[in-house]
Image (cartoon, rainbow, N blue to C red; front, side):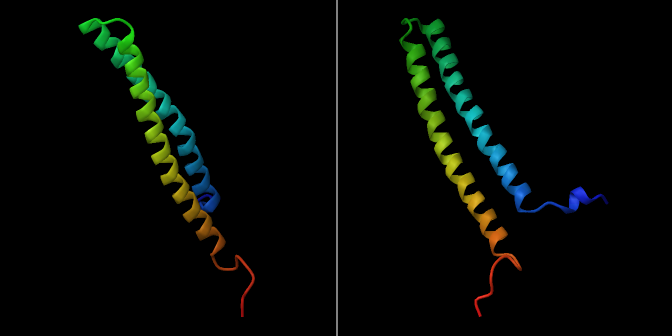
Length: 97
């Protein structure tokens, strides 16, 4: 085996969590875009002017921010656990004897 597969430590876990956090932004944008598209479809089917697009956008923003907060809190807890494992491993700090 090469050395790269053996070097999976805390930094690799933290990097993956960081990329997931970056992906939350794209997920939030897709919720907003989905709300706008849904509002546009409702406007085309039922009529009623641009109000449906605005309602869809607001619903998309609300659901997107909700997912962003929930996902961010979850990933922050994972990041804290990874940091604790890295800091409490053998030889990670001074002995308190």
